[in-house]
Image (cartoon, rainbow, N blue to C red; front, side, top):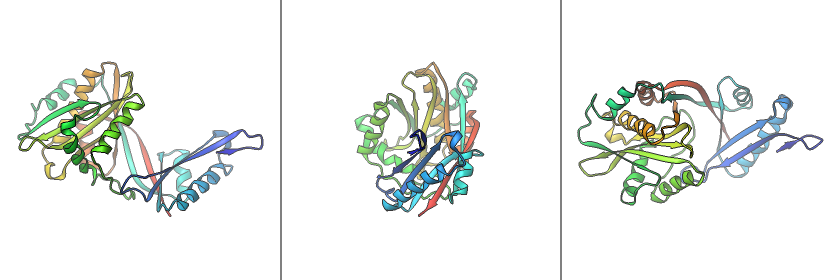
Length: 274
């Protein structure tokens, strides 16, 4: 926190130290400065302190994010951070979407998915599916992240359960759709959506992924269409669903386009190598 001579707050910096296995090298910083106090060195002072703390904690990379063409974007670029990733934010307005098309994709009218089926649940994964669901999370290991020094996150049953509990503890609603391999009953892909507790506003996609050995069967589009269909049924007052996708994740961007998501803005990920 930075304060003026009269102790009025001028700005703040928040530093997050990642502790998950595979990401102990990483920190994330967010700097906020009151509009009237910008361009006076406050942001630089806060950022320097945060970076020093990350260095003292033994981190090798600090990441930060800002919307494109904003003061935050320019500040990070001028502070020695390099742009490592562009995220395309998009939104699907549920009252304007092509419902018949979503239903056709979900019901596999357009393209059959031989050997696979969909399953879904709300909240925590059922106990009998927890292990195979945790195993399916490696679908995100090769998610396009540009040049970000993001590491590889290790998932197990405990972490899957803890993530669902964290969503519930803050009062939000989690829905998960999975693709199941009929040959052995294992989960080979998943798509997650988090909705505000009152079921209004916009839901946020938390991730959609398919294991590498099962890609090429249109499972990603199938799961995401089913998620949209369920969102419309389970949360009739929901306005839309939003997602963010790396600009170099061409397959997922094509899925979003096919389902009717419209881009809203771009966010830039910056990184400082310590």
